[in-house]
Length: 277
Image (tube, rainbow, N blue to C red):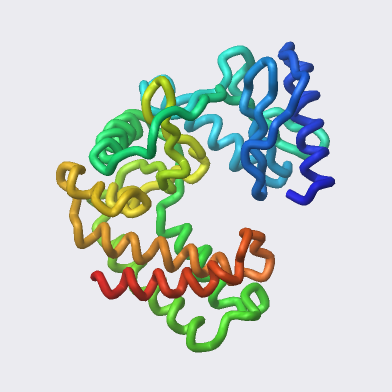
């Protein structure tokens, strides 16, 4: 968010928490993107604040988190002092979560695979109406095909991304018997090391597909520690993830920091991933 919008988001989070009976003397920015994560002190709450246009996504995340907590999944939980729902105020959607102080080193591949196995087991115990992962591929593909939405993408790179997304979507989504509910983007940045152990966060990306789609977001060596994982499918899903990442960087309205670097790097990562298949 731009500084003015970020300030408004912080004040909205403060007001929302105070109206729900929580004391807020200080607001710290934990993460700033299209939605922001704010630590509220001294109540020690993590407020996730998004434009109200993302209300449906925020409400979906809260519902998934509530059900996964009941299933004892290794996930970051909503703050237990307030009702588990999204508050809409001043054109923002606000949800309040437990704040976890990060501890320890980065997670090892074997430990990542273990926590993902437990997370997938919990996901199989809940029932939510989630999209298929190929729906996300279709969104990325639409941006590649629309020259107005990706005007700076060269014709050769446009054809390359189009063919890659189309081909890998068909290859990775062909066997529906492997599908189950997934996290959707369980990369290490969405896995916190806490005093309660590793916990997944950012649950709005929940979707359906093979477990290999989730594994492709994790450490390179994690799949060998995940029982029954198909290494070839992991490689295809990893290439697909990089192709989607690259497609999103070429959107005219993309706001990722250092976007020019990641436009070139993303295409290189796609080619490197394809070489491994």
